[in-house]
Length: 218
Image (spheres, rainbow, N blue to C red):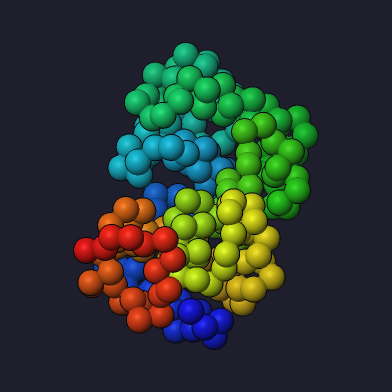
């Protein structure tokens, strides 16, 4: 694809995505405007379907929606509440440890700086960027499997790892698109641009796509 086509692609996907369900972390951010909820929801969502994450997040936040109240819950209680999400035992311990760190080191406030967020236990670049962009509305590029796959499939970039993708997008993608880029590609990837046999026949941006690595489509 041509570099300048990214403007058309973002514009088209912006019109299409309202037809699809938004990622659960995005809905959480839009509903509550709370960085703590964004942080915890993101951790819960890792390797878990959005429908499950939505139910589990609701149950957990009904019991505790801030670091102090969350820390009052035992690991066993959190495990029970967040089951059956993936790695629920590990995530329960991570959540309590995170809350202790937030209280002790950040006066219960979730950091709005990427480097500070990355110091927190269990927080990787994807989670940190989501907190920065969705929790605080600051510029950042969150790269998950959809963003990495689709950016390369389009031919917009050529990278091998999510970290390489993030670093190259920070250089190449116009900054005005940074915050929305993840939401657009996640929704698009979940509904049309699937990992295997993508729906190219009904894709609204098919004419701009190089289809890198696509052997079979629908």
